[in-house]
Length: 186
Image 1 (cartoon, rainbow, N blue to C red):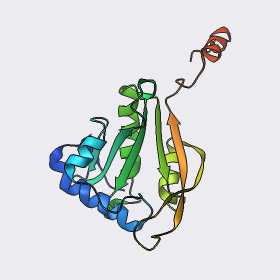
Image 2 (image 1 turned 90 degrees about the horizontal axis):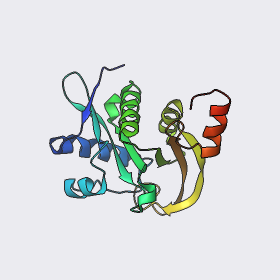
Image 3 (image 1 turned 90 degrees about the vertical axis):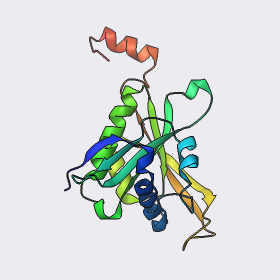
C-alpha cells in the first residue's frame, strides 16, 4: 500500500494527468479515446469540481479523477459521469480507493446525487473498486461503440453502466414520508 494525498487538480498537474491517461488508453480497456486531449479540451470537457489528483508522499501524481456533466438540461444538474485513472506503478496499492472515496465525498458535498460511469467489462479491477464503494451495475450496454484503435480496432465493444446514488436522494416523497411514519430518519 502506498500513502497518498488527495488534492484538487490544477493545470500544472496536466503533464502527469496526461501521462496517466495515456497509460490507461494503452490498455485498450479504459476508454474509446485513442489519445488524450490537449489541456484545453480536457479542461472544457470536465466540470471544475470535483477534479482531484492523488499524489504519493514525494508529491508525484499517481492518479486522477474528474467528472463531466451527463446533460446540459437543468433537471440533470446533479448527475455526472466520472473518470478515474491510476498510474501503472500505483495500481493495486490503494491509491484508487483513496481517490474514489475522496471523489465521492467531494461529489456529495457539491450536491451531486448520481455518479455514473461506463466501464469495459474486461476492466475487472475498476468494476470491483467501484462495487466496494457502493456503485451498482445498471446494465450492460451491448455493442455500444466501435473501437477505433489498438488490438481491438474494428471490434464492437460492450460497456457496463454503473452508478452510485447519494444516500436518500433517490427516495420518492412517499418513501420519505413512510420512513418518517415508521420513526426512521432518512
